[in-house]
Image (cartoon, rainbow, N blue to C red):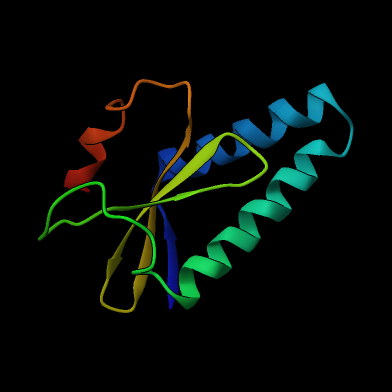
Length: 101
């Protein structure tokens, strides 16, 4: 399954890792490792996690265990598109404009 990141999701991932790294040395790397593990789990079984939008543009959410982040993604054919890397404290709808992309 081919992995594609929305540019804003990629930026959110980088910013989160930098935030944790500035707090505690090595924590940013731990965040990225957990994120990578989460993406691998999603790739193996993408329909396992709950849908947060309706079909035909169904988006699903994976909640990370150790860090307060959700990975919002969409499966389109053989592509896994990561659209949002959202901290739980952010407004729930701030990313809705990405559904068009």
